[in-house]
Length: 189
Ligand code: GAR
Image (tube, rainbow, N blue to C red; front, side, top):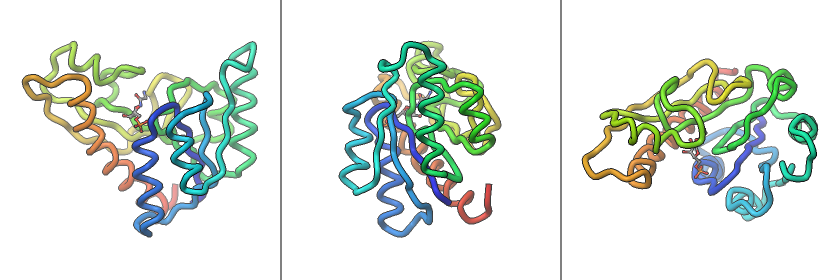
């Protein structure tokens, strides 16, 4: 299973995928890692590991549709079986989704459909839920919407901050992501 990974930030989930592939625990071929902006640590991690990288800088395009088209073309040029949004913080349009229909995987640090968006951990804390978690799902053109493949629950502890809670969620998120990729690579999409 050939994958392209999209990141916008730190790329700690990406690192878990890179490590699992390196250690022979995950049988996927990483075709490339790309970002919507330059200078992300995620892309640096991929380059350090020797994988092709690309940036389709959102700010370089006058209109969102132009950026979407450029991103779609760039990702398609690597002929991936699956595209993984690993902390990719941009909404993609129908053209992108149709090009990778049912093959665009996203992870989110909340129990969807609760708390979608860029601040899933902060929003769950602010609401005061006692249990939150993470979700791995097929993404469509909405904000963290699409069929759910796997979820894990994480308890909110007294005194949790966004950072401490997110760190505990990420432990589960990485496990869920690796398990899901492993299952998809063995059983097919
Ligand atoms: C992850 O927790 C991911 O679920 C979240 O961004 C983080 C990226 O961390 N994505 C979203 O919130 C999408 N709505 P990382 O860059 O360290 O892997």
